[in-house]
Image (cartoon, rainbow, N blue to C red; front, top):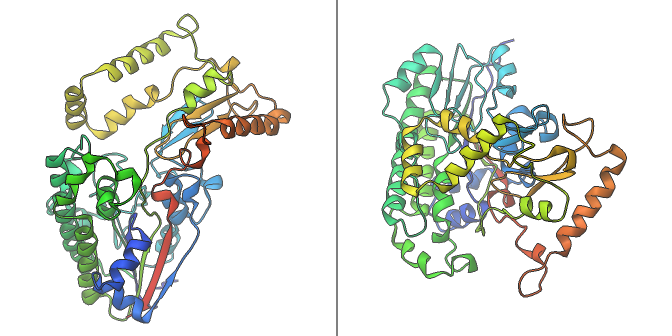
Length: 430
């Protein structure tokens, strides 16, 4: 059945756009496109699986399944058969638009994070043109005429220069990052216009990823009074131009242009699956804590294989490398290569016969994995002991105190980040 006879849908994913800031900017007249949509449409809130892990959000969106089904909860996921971690690619997942395309609907998908490539023969699919989350580090576009359009377009400034910011006082690179993000939004709007003109899909899904990337570095500019930003080093950052609000405004302008050109009579949707808030950083105390308290044990040199010893030496060399050398390494090596080399060094070598629980690497929450017998190749904890061990670990975490003897759990175990705010907005039909 061909469903192209129905009303068109033009959807915009505004990656990691914070709903409270969006609402405030709409009320202040700074986002006229969204204000116009909201005047005749609806603002709705949905629960996302971001509390499980930010990596679970987009796979849940495009598969329609929870992370307990699709298995993607972070950029790096546990692989029990190998007793190690693997990088999420999304390629093993099936997006909802695959069924639509097979039933005759023309679909266009542009830079949805972790999107699987299904080989569309009509419409367009473009991935990693200007992503926040690099998976393979190279652009994929289909079908052939779409690939030709993309190849003739200038590369997104963030795709060839990741702009490694050294800290809040790295003003030069922060300035470059914001300028590249602003230029990237304008280029994204132009490329999206070309793709829509050429293919005229029934369903179009266009992701603006620049907000996500820029907000990680300059969120203090919209929440300057937060205690996290009380240090003097953050003071001069308010002078960085363009600002994060400029990034939001430009996304609004580009959406307005695309809606005006292609959205008449279409259903327009704008949504964000992440948000953003101040944060203290990534929790890193769980791995040594679990070893100190006897829940985990590191493998000693004698018990390691030659492969494990080589990996340990490589990890030590990486930790001790000068910062300048590290920057050169990440700038010159392909992303796929750096990820492949990083994978075996991201976790310490454990003695699995004496490890009941261990910490997983995380970009957001502190995660503890139970070394369960029958579920893992090196599992040792019997199933009947699982609940008791979980309670034991919970008691340990709740007993931790700060220097001032206040409970550590109050703030230190709350990752004040994009996972804490989640929203979706649906707007009017034009």
